[in-house]
Every structure is written in structure tokens, then in C-alpha cells.
Image (tube, rainbow, N blue to C red; front, side, top):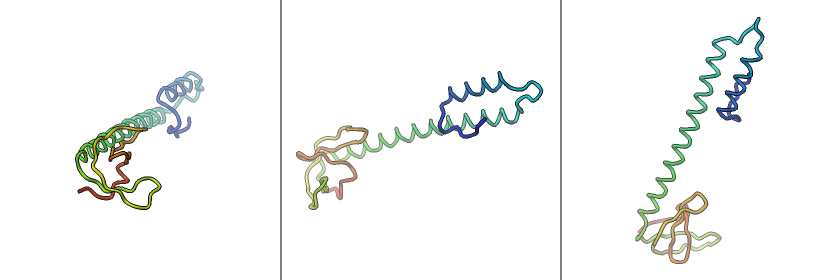
Length: 118
């Protein structure tokens, strides 16, 4: 059985493992250490996926907090496609397409466009 589990899910892995056990050669059964290694790899992949999801949620929460902290503050930012900086007061923050956008006057500004906070 292949040891690269990154491209398959837990259910698919278990289906492959069951198929392997059903179709194994009775004169040469699966080695217990190989079986344990495969299960450990599955658990490691699942743990990494859970950790990645947790980090992603933490990042979203941090971005929302950063945006909320800027409400009422004056920021200097570089609008998309512009060469000159603009200044304005942040009036709100909202989620758009998986990231947080600040409303500054009539402009929608992402956190990475902000150059300074006053």
C-alpha cells in the first residue's frame, strides 16, 4: 500500500486498508508493523488537517479583531491601482470573499493596503 496519504481522505484510506486485508495472501499476511505504521500515518494526516483548520480559523479571528480595532481610527492606505496614498476614517469591517475589508469613506480597503494608523 502506498504511504503517500496527502491526496486521499480518511474514508478512502480505510476502504483501501479493508480491501488490502480482504485480498491479502493467506500465506503472506500483512505485517503488523506495516499495519500500525499505516494507521499512524492516517492519524498524523488527520491531526495535521485538524491543526490546519484550527490555524485558519485563528487567522480569520485575528484579522477580524485587527479590523474591528481600526473602526473610528484614521488610516493611510494605497487604493488598488493608485499611486497616491489616501487618508480616511474606518467606519466598518466586513467579510468579503474569505478576507476582511474595511470601509474607509467610499473605498473598500484590505488590511494589507493600510500603510499607517493615526
